[in-house]
Image 1 (cartoon, one colour):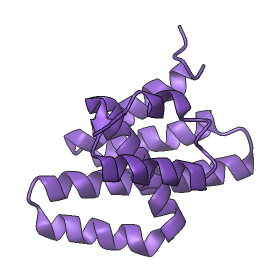
Image 2: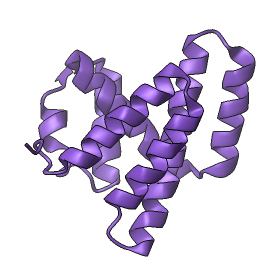
Image 3: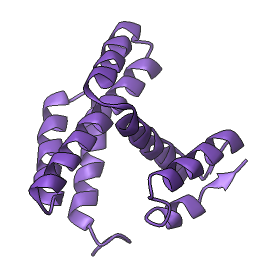
Length: 140
């Protein structure tokens, strides 16, 4: 059975990647990330873009997890890597995905974050791609 995007396998891999990151299994996370890129890319250019995006997304997830766990030194190290290895546009994309996931998970976002997410999706040309998910996130 496919999910609403038609990419059941890739969605499953992305979920497993998130679980590996949350559990602290960096080796498994990297293995899943590479597999997701290999299976999800449709061209060499697409593979390079997906590789960079998933690297940034993984770093961002590790950073937020470390920050949330009170691991200030680890969080600072991951933040420094994220900023050094990825440009502002990629970081905005990753932040938007994280906000979209948080909003979808809880069903709402504070008004300022909801507006920021909407504006970010519009600016990135992704509003149509994520309209269904975004439409399910209440603005509070």
